[in-house]
Image (cartoon, rainbow, N blue to C red; front, side, top):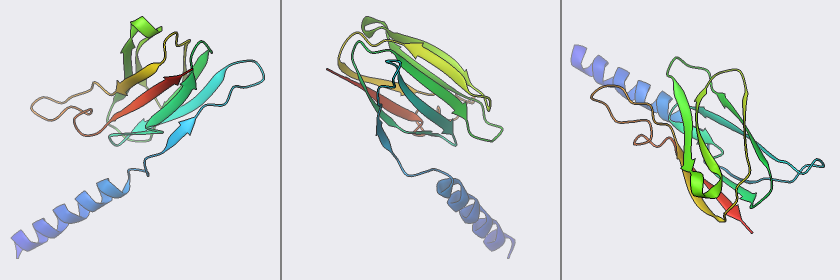
Length: 135
């Protein structure tokens, strides 16, 4: 009986964890009146929303990053110095603005580099996305 209750409990927890992840969404950043492309990125529960972002080359970008509620720490890392993009920022529940100007068209991954000892990294659990820089 205990074993059955344990299995049912674990299945319930797994379904709740899966339900917390939003539908994967892509956005194309619009250029605001001041000439800046702005996108809000929410991270948490091993996801980024949106997970795919399209911006234009040589136009300033402001990513407003915020962590969804929860105890697990997350960050957002993008390493493409050859394209003018290079950051590693902790995500908090208070919004933080990351500014850069992409200088080269291409597709650049971003991810969470957090990892608990002996477990999969957050990136391996699916906490990753793509910035697509277009002409």
